[in-house]
Length: 601
Image (cartoon, rainbow, N blue to C red):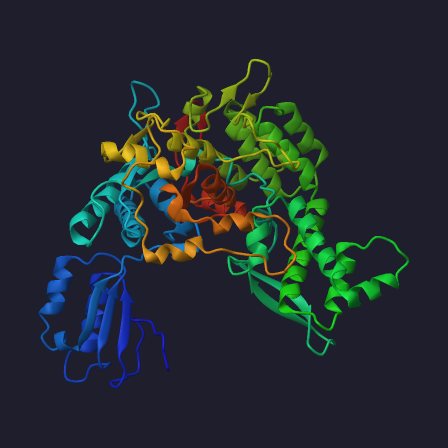
């Protein structure tokens, strides 16, 4: 069967003997192009099967109906409601790379703001249309800086997006067959200001480190391998995605844990392979390194694609550990986490900047953002310029810190009740942006940090989010209270005890619950086994949408809480950003002539 994929707006060769499938957004331009293709005596194609990515306005349908030459040539005309982009089995993006700039930047351009907000709302709504879920839409409510001032325009973005999303979803009740009439899940809409530390702190899991430290293009990694003849080196592209079961097993593991598991896999392979044992017996009895094991396995005649994947990840983990050593990231990572949890202060930061002059500008800037998040008062007046000189950062770099403070609301932070939920422990002499999680043991060094959404999702599941801070666009019906584990119900309640209605599960979600097994044949206990969980037996889904970009750590938390809460937690955002991307976006925010308590920008 021959197929051809083409751009609607490029000149195309007429194929009058072939049928065409159109998958398009319901825009005026697309409808005009479609009619141009299929009208008249000589249409481009024999028949057209048209699938719109979201609901089609009636005027567009009437426009199509009015062309009598086109109607008999239409084989199908349907709304697919597929305007989101899945990037993980529990995450999607709306693909708005400039959302931070368009929604929080140029407030003087309302047309750009409205266009971005409405398209984002439409794309979020199609997630619920395709899954046939009716959410209770909650959002971070806008706060006035004090009783005499109104909320800032940035604070109102979650409110406006929640209203636009609900406006789209509420129409599905009457337009989509079998769409639920009562709430079946929960949606929490947040802005990036809820946590300004998560986008820049060094996250020590395998997934986050790969995207932060390696030169990757999305999920694409390029590595060098010997050619088939063995006399040359070839560059090979691989995708680090769900189809790679070793990646699936290790992605949320601490880098030290991932390295240990990979060594264990190689050792297991060697111990179960006679040829490898013979090679090993020829050595002097010294313990084999992971690199030695890798070379040994690659030399075996029965070297397979499965072992090739283990070898790939051994190479990646080795490269990450080398970068961590060369850049001195362990000491920096310790300082970052100590700052966040109130175990380090100004003296520690100043000492680091004085003694680690060779630290990269990006790493020093990331440290400054964390420092400003915990200690905003240290950036008042000329204090900021002194820190800038000590860190040897440019004015452009410090603009990132200022923009972060603007997004977060500096005045709020100083009252210790703002976006960062700053806590002050009387037993400590330092401030903190997080408190240690009770009942969770820190197995690996530098695994202490957690993003704020972990706390928010758990509180949402327990029904402990206050309505004045997290308002609801549509009050749920009483029967949903039990189904979503809110109110007096316990979050750990067994699914069989939850009252109806349950979250509706469509056939198209089956691949989200597919069992996975690491393909090396000698898998250690891992998070992969959690992927075989049957989501149909869980409580209602929780959707969290972060405006302005989400992080790898927040994605990890959604996977973790799915198992812990027995509820599938799905993360949505405009984009998934790695630290360099997020910093670039903060730099692109336009300059503002604003004064926030003496801080002029």
